Length: 294
Image (tube, rainbow, N blue to C red; front, side, top):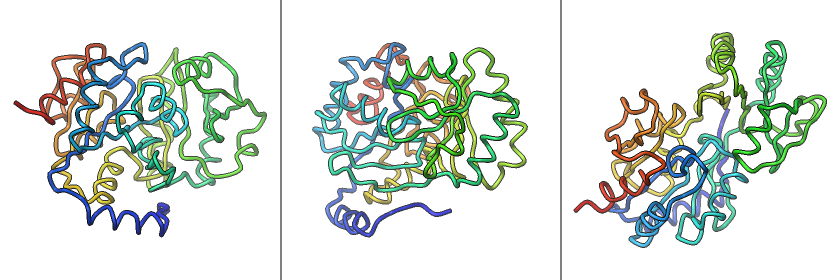
């Protein structure tokens, strides 16, 4: 498995390197549970803090498990595009996008043979599973798991009789959801762990969501790749998150921050745990402490 990086993008990145500044900082931000509050809103304090970051010449990179369309919706609807948030890491690191030019800077998808095996395994355990086609959720079942996911992401769904036949190309990820009994997701992860080794990486993005991506795909590896593309030292990076899928970028960053509402495992791995939670502008606190220290 190899990632996709076009010649055009490679040349563009070489040009970026020649103009880079070694004092430039990059703030990698998880969205749900970190930058957004529990009602999926961004506070005025967070937005103003991020505006200051970009106006000072630093980068703010949306770093999320969401799809490109869902993350793009957040970027535009909350005005992040207007304050200079140009880049997005989506699908937990499987793709890196330049939203200004529309360029795909990096891409790594799940091999179809593994996708089909995982679909079969989920069917066997009667587990809800979906993937994506364009800007739609693609699934075989319309149930409460789907309804909750659509409400949280503002996406639409296409229900199909056979997910394997409906997929026309390799997806970036699969997602298993169980909003009532997450223990079933843990059981599925355990049952698939031996088979998945060396093929697929699986981890939780919240207690109800089990992510399945190509081996090596995570937010931490995407952070390192992005720094390489931009020729910015990793020591100049700050990452903020709250869930287990944020662990890798918190560990990879020069400074890893866990918000006050983060999982205990994430807090233990972080260099800093904020006083404030996601409902009280934790991101603004991080900006003040690590981008503009007094």
